[in-house]
Length: 236
Image (cartoon, rainbow, N blue to C red; front, side, top):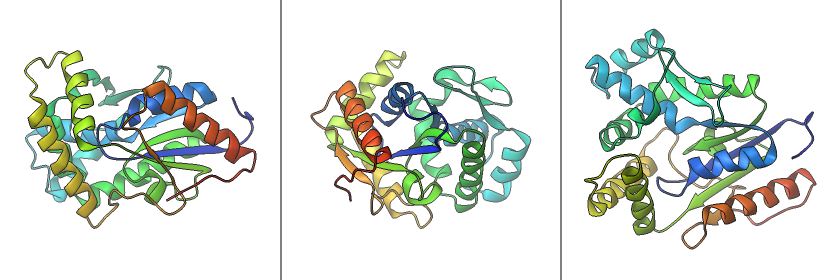
């Protein structure tokens, strides 16, 4: 743990399949602070558009629907449970279908702008936070005390994601299809004009291709503690 009175925002960015969510949850527990899964927020928007029959690319429809169907977290749970309309969404937001729709949602500037503001409001309430996503250290919290960018080979990321989907009941997942979806999502995330996926200057780059999950957590925890103590590490 680190000083409980000290503001501490830790951002973890990177493409799909690098283990950001699981690592973020474990790192938050290791440091004794909260965790924010921003990808879950975008997935909740995707789920909402599907339930409401709304074109996910139409900001004029999606943004008012976001106001009508609030997204929040149950902070009494560890990790915090994402909710849509006050109801836990569980694995409903983790399907391959949601993954395809969230790529569309995340590319809409008006939606990203609303999400950035929502995430910053959360940090005002929870100023000791591990926040993971694709633009946390570059856009949402460029002044975060510690910023990380996780990466890994696309084939390894596809294998991890397919294994994760099978573990949650999606038995007919084809790894080749997951790889194709990941590569398409990478291209879209990196090419969008608003909040593109990038390793921001000053963020610490960590390649997780040959690292186990706990190994990544321990590396990040060491880096955070070194930063808090005033040490300097290699960066993008």
